[in-house]
Length: 331
Image (cartoon, rainbow, N blue to C red; front, side):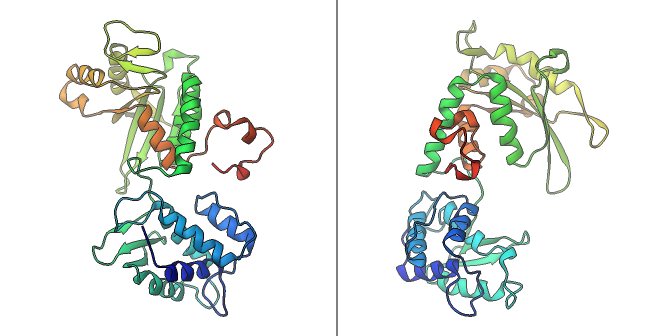
């Protein structure tokens, strides 16, 4: 995506907070680094002229993968949302009206406008089509260079991880980041308390209705072979566990209620073959079949990366682990 240099320079001045009586916070070198970290990027100011450096960063962000010409990259949207954070309102512009107006003068040149949604966050909208661009995680979008590096590190971790590592280091933080509540792993030391599930959790809909989920997790590939092979699990082993999971109640201590699982996730650290999905679907009745969802390695990798979940310590290269603080890790 190519924007005019004038537009990029004007937005860069807003981020820096340059000028007199401007409705933007002034940011020195260290605060510019913090700004871009808050926007989930790993850029650090190199000591050069601030506005020129920021303008170059904005140009680079616009070259990140994006959906179409009416949708700026997610990384650029996060920068705009960070710039318009309501907590950065100035005394002369407490509701950020002046800041929004100034930003929109520049954005209109490129066919976009910024607006505040009811969640008090700033979004970009294409003026011609009305399409809204957000910074929301989309696991099917193209990944940036840094995201591909994080994905490779996660692949190396999964290749060596045990089932407990997959649950504790990957799935629990992932589902918490995605907005699920009460994400709880059952204790593998007492199999009698699992009742077919390794994790249970709940999700609150916008209508305030609550859905409950159970997860059956396998470390390796899940196939439909007649006999389990090394490095794979047979889907026939999953059938009884899924049936047990859907039929057994769980106790939610926060609501003091016993509830049934609404949906069951079958999660594999490897591939879930099409034959395995079909075999399981054929042996479940229509009502139970609609309750089953699958998540294999590709789904885990993409969701983990685009949701910006911190990598497990064991997944980081040796030069990035140990005494290095998490805030200093560029991933």
